[in-house]
Image (spheres, rainbow, N blue to C red):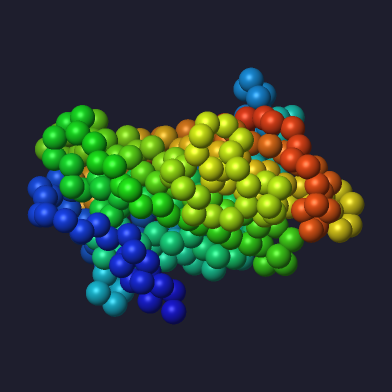
Length: 295
């Protein structure tokens, strides 16, 4: 079922149009394996550190039905608070069902539908890097340095925790620019931001509209409040700027940098039916690096 979903997703993602120069070729070799180290810092407001995260992933390559696939597992995951207290969340990561993605043109990078809430950030980072590298978003069709491609389609991701108490979603469209090209590598800058029209519903009618700018809000997060029957709600604008370096011969991501900016309203202790007024505005930033590890 998961593989079929990837192929179905690809039908939506695959871009149509005239032939283009193949700047990067995606090539999977079944039996290969590799991994990444993902390191993130999350700050609020003027740069106050909230926490940092470090995750390690393992990617096993196999032949899927018509496309090569990567089966992704998170092997290590820790979070370090502003007070330097380290929390090992590897058990939560180990409980995640393996995530299947493909960087081939007819593959896809769907977001897992059910995840532990603690993994939403690191999985969102990883999907952003893979979206930036995927042919359907335009990277492979750009052949001239500084040329760009505007992907007009909006793509949403939604998830929920296993107990349903936490859930979130975002809606993004991509602008891709080739910024450096060598015989072996290609570097892309990809801006994943809000589309002109909403493609995701906010938790309640009171949260519809826009927090900043003129485009509709494109991200939300609902989590349990401090009081039974109450929830905390975050709604607003998400913009991700990703830089990915790809191996031109294989399409593999060699390294990546990502900056996510959330301009949001935070509403604490709202009734579960969302009959409350939006709360206070603030800004969160998440800065992430992706480093390839060989097995």
